[in-house]
Length: 296
Image 1 (cartoon, rainbow, N blue to C red):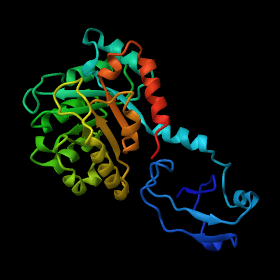
Image 2 (image 1 turned 180 degrees about the vertical axis):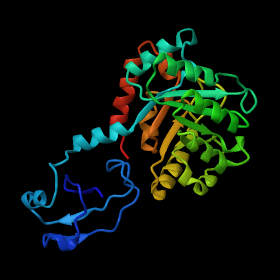
Image 3 (image 1 turned 135 degrees about the vertical axis):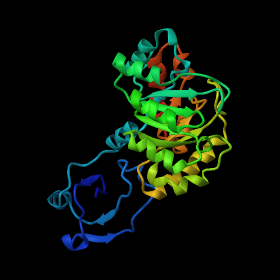
Image 4 (image 1 turned 30 degrees about the horizontal axis):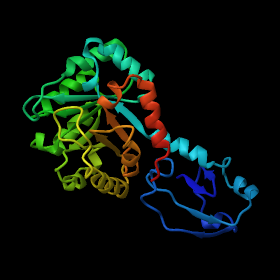
């Protein structure tokens, strides 16, 4: 358990009987996981103890507001989509964008069947791994059916694999397949796809990816209604108690990333906003600045 009170961080639970200084214990609070060190639940204790007593009960040094902000910032991840990169020098492009501060490499895999475009396959994933890319590779499958290609990308070195529920006849089985291959599993929801099915597979999902554009092509504008859907997904995730990343893909820019974060997103896929900019680092730094100003 991680217990916080008045800036003090406790490494073990403190029960009412442990100290006469404790005046009350509030009920377990949900929906504060993101605000409190990314923990599923935090129990808040009301103390009348002095700092000396608090330290004697196992508290570490006070946690400042700045430290908490840094911790929250560390939970935000930026994932440039290589769909917008220069494929003539893809290895160099990925190296450069990671050096500029990106956290994850995002793959948009399209089959010209599930979506009206044809992009990249497992060979590109393996090539980047062989090139020496160490950052996690986040594979978003816009293909149907998905099971065979899941195996292929797992073999190629993918770290995260997400797919659309409409693209498989057996969602539960496909999610289990992803995890059985040692990858993080996730579901992708199109702008008009309901989140209802999510509640039945929360225990098998590591990532929920919301599309904020209609899938198929990069460079599209963010669909504003996605903000409400993000809030709905954030609430479902927080209430579930599971450690699930909420990812957004489509139309993310320096102008709207703060608002998107405030709606609940953890990971931000940005393609043209980064790769079409003259300075990757400047763009990613500006995104970080906006994220630092976001409030939950």
